Image 1 (cartoon, rainbow, N blue to C red):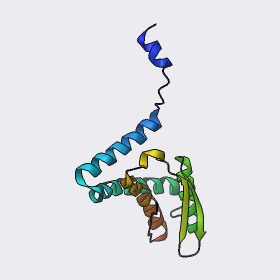
Image 2 (cartoon, rainbow, N blue to C red):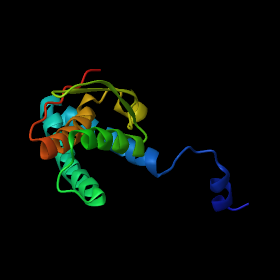
Image 3 (cartoon, rainbow, N blue to C red):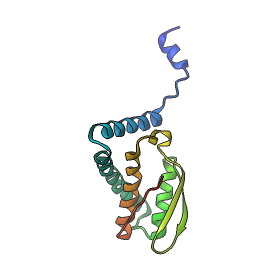
Image 4 (cartoon, rainbow, N blue to C red):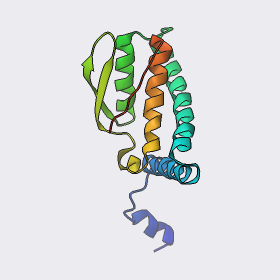
Length: 142
């Protein structure tokens, strides 16, 4: 049997999503080790900001609106996390704030020990909220 055939039969749990989540984990870990947590979180925040801007444009374009309403913002945040296999839900909501909870982080176990990765969620949410509603304060609790 050729090596190629043997390799294709191995039960190696490797696919693109796992590879990319592991890549992000290792990049974050390297940044945290080399420049420290605060600077790593800062760099990752910039990435989250860019992703937030991209996602906001994507959703507003697809919904054919210039800006999302408060209700649309909440629904977009929940939808985008669902699409990337996170599980977020509304805990509390009034005219001044929304509190979201989650049972599943899209990064799964790859976020454990890499707190700077949480800056992606913080900044994506913050950008989408601020771009549409004018102001955002995002607080992440473990």
